[in-house]
Image (cartoon, rainbow, N blue to C red; front, side, top):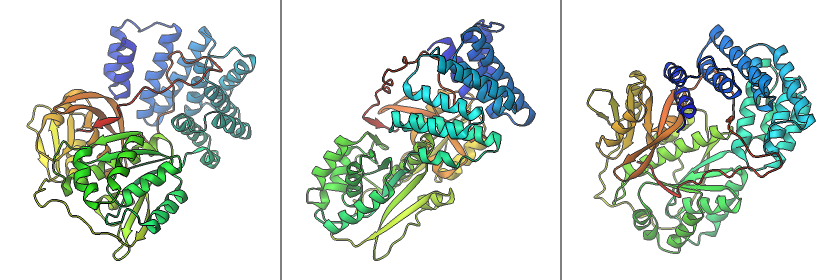
Length: 491
């Protein structure tokens, strides 16, 4: 990792003093070249997001000035649009308009930064917004979206930025909704459906078509899970699978006992899934393992909806004889204001209970620096303890009292509340006022896991600033995202 990347990582973690110390140690203090000014502006912007009142305004204005100074050295639409947006957030619409007009002039002249067609159009739309022409911005944004109709993350970055700017000027942001992707779906529901239950398949397909989610996250138990997953793929939505144990274990206990062709259909869906996450290294399935996977999947849906600037929604296929969506996880989901769509169905096959020998319990672990790891029966309680300790806690959620990953999380990013991937996802379900940032990885006894930093959501989310690294030339295809592991143990 380069020195500049290390400085930016510290800034993203909220370690402002450490970031500036590394900045000075690298000999960057006082330098006024383009790259250093861009880095300085980014550090001040990150600080402004976490600040309040007059300090927040001051930092936004200073960050704007740094980006503007960089553009004076090298004319740059990237630097100027950041200068314009940060000036607007700093309460200086006159300066914002001036910088935005320079952006439009560069774009019209063709002397702009090399970039993809989408980002060139999105930059123009942002500049039009800042020059007081929301109608032009809306039309240009429509053109940008048409260039990459399924580039949801790119759209989300733009929409978050526009929402901030419209809020800062007191303007209506309702027109942004037309560019948001369909909701992110978490699905869960009824077992005990026959593999050839055409009525159930049709009802579920109609429910999924009505919601039209951009992607769906859930398990693949025989019954409604598999029917929902098949309906998702039929509507061209992405399928993300979260299993409480590995596929062999899951099929043996939650798919094959139902008979029919469920196991074959499970295999096809697993092959078609965009990602597969395993939440527990267990050989015998249990209610606790299923609960863990469900909390993780629901948290992942919340996190992905935020990333795409859309909303999460839960689809629950319930027993028509006793329909209910009032589980503990659903209560947390509703309390956060997320919608649940319930579809009652009559069971058409025998229900196969889990093995009686499965006696796992859910355990939450909190590691505090220089103190023994503590375990809690309630993840909510463990999360409250971790938050109370401030930037000195690591947290994990598991089926055992093994403290390995809680300690690894704690040591993975000193100075931050750090969670394993499963704990970070569950935290977003338990506390809607938390945000999670991916900060790295850690080696676990069974593979690699991600580490996430937990933090309160800022009063106003961070302005979207894309990397200042060189990007593709205008007219070229957008760079492909880095490959993701197909099966990721979340341990």
